[in-house]
Length: 213
Figure 1: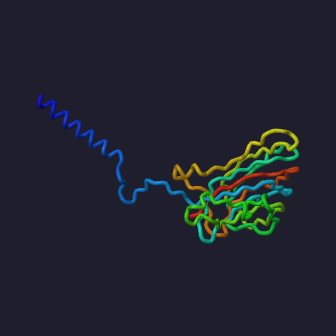
Figure 2 (figure 1 turned 30 degrees about the horizontal axis):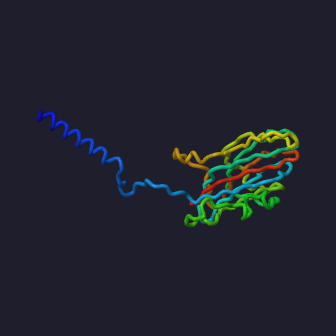
Figure 3 (figure 1 turned 90 degrees about the horizontal axis):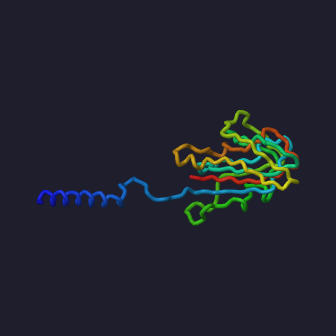
């Protein structure tokens, strides 16, 4: 009987010790809370691509922050059914010239850029620069890095069909400790390129999400 009582007391002590460790204070240097990065997003609507479209939508890096691009979404319609080759390229030298889209067709217009959380310190204004083009820009980096590629099927404008968006989603890579497309400095630029394809009566919509650290 005595042995049984001692065994029961020992088992209870072990269980108590184990249960006491379920909720514990992390050691110094261990992060257990949630702290979001300074994150921004911008959408564009009614962008009319030029003939022989090359770089259509671009985000240029910052002089003061490291810019990490998390997500790009593209969709739209055209006068005739077209499968559009969409390439995401990183340029070491930013584009110049071209004709910038205006108002809601340009993700770089100030009113088009949204902070994901205006209550978080230093998250009230973006430092990256965005642009979209209605006339092709001058490409100064002839040897870009090709980061991703997909086919975008543009639905026919006159037919009541739902367009399926093309989505470049790198945000899930962060969960697996995989690097996302990153821009360091104002010379680096990430662009959505259409490989010189002309789109008949095309109209594009889309969005881009990025963080700044």
